Image (cartoon, rainbow, N blue to C red; front, side, top):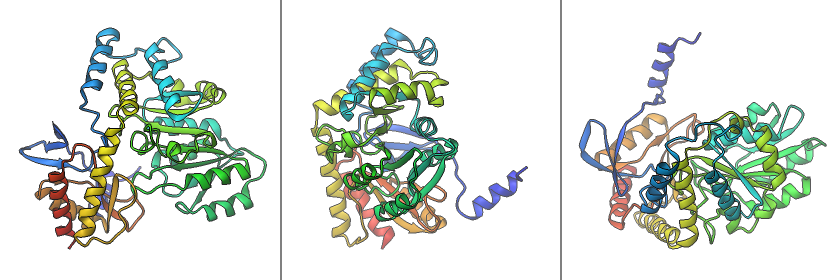
Length: 386
């Protein structure tokens, strides 16, 4: 058995020990830390990109659903927990993603660890980007398939692997459209072309893209016009959509198959009705109010312009996720604490979440942030990085 005390001590020495830090949400992108309620912080670690978690439409939808259906769904979907609101939500997801059907899961982690093992097994191949989310890596491991990881966003490397290893078995390529820790984009058009040449299935995790990109908020696959070339469009409701849970969209046959094979769907209680209703309200909002994401992108551009003007010359990426690379874990923690003292809450992300030597501050811009908030954060960040 692992010596727990020694292991925890080692993690502490390496600057990798994680601790829970209870926060109190004050609204409008502001939080206080438990035990320090008098000091308000600007939250730059939230994934509530469109500020929908506090939107009256989502709150009203959740409240109404709770009044009608109660607090929980009561069972798994294949027992008696299959509510009409789940089907309404799935129909809305399918329409957003340009697919025939969709299926909801309890979380993004549950989706990825359920979908991937259902599609690939012992004699199959999975080609996975090296910087894919941990839930994707875990889904690949659970599948028992042969896992081949290609260099991040390097389609030349992927093509080499496909030429050498493709064979006749099922082959699945898995990527993220917006990478959660680097904020960069996958070259999806080129990837779709590659997967078609080699006869592979393509799964795209749109957790950080849905609601933020695309004319209707359908993510990068909508913006790039490649929905028909993506076999499985996976994503979450807990980020820009302000709710909780996850989904996958694809053709009807594929969704029917997952209903029968995805263990994390089959053996889990269905999403609570209030959560499903809030997610449905969010999907309607992003379709009806494109100004939500337009406003967000203006704020993203404003913040990046402040950093560049202030002399920060590292790559700031193409999305709302801005990684400030530091290097060592202890140094990243120190920088995060300096920001905290200036009223900015930005989490230090350390290995194993990111590769060794790439600890960073991960800042995410949301609609909550005013230009004043963004100016304060940019000034503080430039100071600690100077």
